[in-house]
Length: 357
View 1 (tube, rainbow, N blue to C red):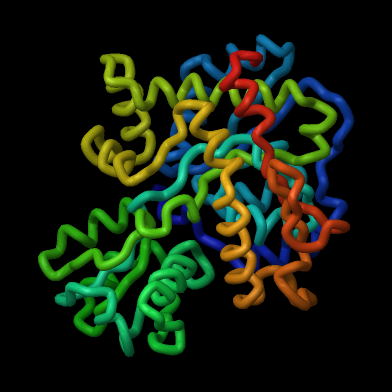
View 2 (view 1 turned 90 degrees about the vertical axis):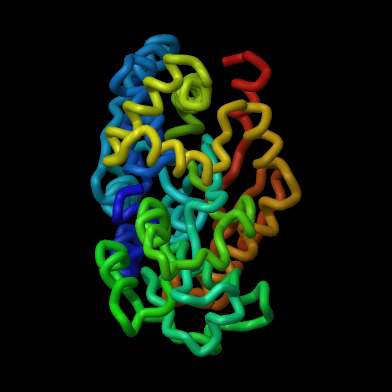
C-alpha cells in the first residue's frame, strides 16, 4: 500500500465540503469516462487492466472510452473525484462517507473489491496481549482507518480511547517512530505492518481479520453519471472481475500478473502475495454480491458513521450520525432519507455473476 493510502484528512474534508453540490459531475449521457486509483494491494488490478488492454476491451464492448489514472496520493485522488474531475475512484467505505458523500457528491459503490483481513494491525513492543495497551501512547494516523481499528480493538476488551493516548504520526514516519525507545504501541497498515513486524520486539495483538468486512475497498462512481450511463458501470464490473480472476489464478499467467502488480506497487512477488493473503479479495462476482447484500453491511456502516460523527468528520454542522443518508442494496436507508449521498448496489456485480454483462 502506498504510504498515503487510506489516510483521511480534515483539510481535504473541508475542501470537499466547500465544493458542495456544485462538485457533482455532469450527469448527461456521454462516451468518455475518467477513473482514478491509487496504490494498494486490492486496487492494483485497475492499473494492470489499463496496462494490459483489459480496460480497452470492456470499454470497446460498450462503445465508450475509459481513461484510468494512477494517483500517488490517495487523498488527492478522492479530492479530484469530489471536485468532479473524475467519474469514479477507488476508496474505502469510511473515506467514501467522510469525503465525497460529506462533500455533497452523491456516490455509488459499483464494485466491492475486497476487505482488509489482516493488512491493518495493532502492534505492541515487548507485550503480547491487547490488554497491555492500556495507559500507553499509541502512534497512528489520526482519523484514518487505523484510528477506527484502534477504537474497535479497545471496544473488544471493554476499553475506550480514554484508556490510551493517541499520538498523531505520519505514516511516512511510522517505521522510524516504532524504533524510538519511548514508542511502545502503533497502529498502521501494510506494507508498514510487515516492516515493523520484522523487529524482534514487535507483536501483533489485534488486526482487521478480527473485524472482518468492516474496512472495505471499493470502486465508486458519481451516482448521476452512473444513472445516465449504466454501460459505464457494466464495463467497470467486467474489468474488475476479469482482472481479479487473473490475479488469484494459480496459472503461470496469474503468477506473472501478481509479479507485475507487486513490482508496480513497490514490492516483489513474495511481498505482494503476503499482502494479498491478508486481503479478502472478491474475484468471483457471486461472492461480492453475497457480501454486499448481507445483513452485516448496515451494521458495519452504522459503526463507521458513528465513529466519523464522534470525530467530527461528517461536517461541523452535523447534529447526529443521521446527517447523511446511506442506501443499502435492498433500499434500506441509514440516516436522512432526504440527503442520501452514499449508495451500495449489487446491480453491476450481479450482472457479472449471471453472465449478462
